[in-house]
Image (tube, rainbow, N blue to C red; front, side, top):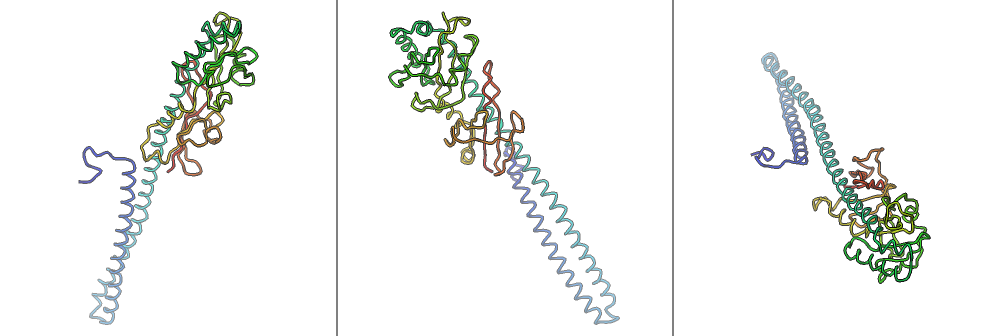
Amino acid sequence: MDALSTIGEQVSVNDIIARTERARDLTRHKVRDIRQVTNTLRILALNALIEARRAGEMGAGFGVVADEVRNISTQVEGLSLSLASELGGEIEALEKLTRDMALQAQGARLTDLALNAIELIDRNLYERTCDVRWWATDSAVWEAASNPTQDGCAYASSRLGVILDAYTVYIDLWLCDLNGNVIANGRPDRFGATGQNVASRDWFQKALGLHSGNDFAVADITTEPLLKGAQVASYATGVRVGGQADGELIGVLGVHFDWQPQAETIVKGVRLSDEEKKRTRVLLTDAQGLIIASSDGRGTLSERVPLDTKGRAFGHYTDRADRLVAFHRTPGYETYEGLGWYGVIVQEG
């Protein structure tokens, strides 16, 4: 029974392409065979004509038949050439359409996987925006910011440490005064952040300009020297008097999400076959194309991907190296709009 007609047999686009290639090769072989037969007939007809002319009047009738055989063989050869040209062209067109269909289907699939990866990040980081706004209302935090005594700051550090014990996705939490001096941190035994000044950090500057405790600031992925060069996603909000959303600003709470292991789990967890994984890179990039996570561990915070989005939020295309590139911009999640990051999948042919 034909493999493509077997009940329950799963047929892929690659199967169709393989069959099309076989049909093309079969057509070429059969046309070649026909031409060989017609060439033989023409030679026989020519020989018969020669013999008929030698026989003179006695071979005249035979010569007519031989001449007709030669004409028919010429017509058959013409038909075979036409068949080879027309049918071959149709098969090539069918093969191209099938390959295009396969490319479109694979591109759409990889685009969906890119979306899934960036959505997982969005949902994860949305929770970070909730955490920082909640923890800034802790009485130990706002009291230490209001009156940064040694005992008050030590107690705030211990409270931040309790939070870190429960939320293992964070590297450290910092309570800062309005001048950017860290007055308490959750892991003083690991990181000597307390007493350091972080006024130049992007997340701190953004937090100073927030209108209320319901707002938050976020910075792109970077390495933090005070956290031993760890890759972090930092979120911040203002600490306000009484922990009230409309209270006077008295400090800034910054939380540092342990970016690298969390992001690697997502890009390495994209559902690809073992064969696909060998020729595929799954990436997360910032809005400028800087790689902030990669499934192969290469290029993070050093390599840029020149995405050819043509102004689209998502899609796929074939790049100059004949690789399939699928992308999807962050759609955001609830109140977290994201930073224009992209999920990107680059697959070799």
